[in-house]
Image (cartoon, rainbow, N blue to C red; front, side, top):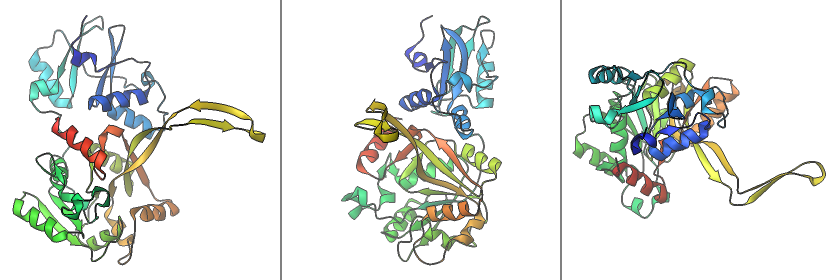
Length: 356
């Protein structure tokens, strides 16, 4: 059987590794792949499947055949389009494979073709506060930020702040707190002129207080679980999945971390006793987990942030670790993290969003 290009590009071998699957998802900007072997349908694998495997400490070089779900939802040639639409809508399926009795892949129906939206809706809605850290100077984006504060840099048809508002709003969020300092009056004026349909509260730092110091100003104002995000990042992820992980794990604080791939531009050597050569690799690839700048916190943590002075969120994390309190890490792929804090990454993000 000859598949269309759109189907063919989503196919991956069961012998591929989790890392290879994540890279393909990032290349396609999709979160679900078909697993096919000799034109026989094997299964599907989602970004969520891989995230759950990572949380269980399964190595990224593990073959995806070892982390597949026992049961996946598919349609058969006997199902009507109405049946397929109901199935996809009920389970938020990015696509639905159509399989024969002999496990041949006959066709694939895509969400955007049927429902005209680019992506399925979030797993569930939630209305929790979101704190946006918008007080930085945007040094890496100068000279633009000499005039325009970083939260208001253009993004799509609006600004970075509007992009963040929109993504959280699609999950049911209505309450936003903006921690501002640099060009605070310009940010406030711009947002008030827009008359956006959200509750936007401003907290003003008298002086720069680090990545978490201004959170002390929210004591008594936030009494529920809340998100914190930098104003120069976008996480392309179902935020309800992150929240569910945080709640199920009973974390006090959850860090969203992205996989980052680097190629070392030199040959590397590994040595043993007396300088004996053990191994040499030419320009090896390395993958590390990077703090994206998005977190979920429980409200009692606000009382643990000093009222004065410079205080980074990493200091709060270190304090919690010393007391053996529950901190979790929710993994996302490299392509799910868009960091607009420097020109090269900003340009890539703008092009990516304009292409959608």
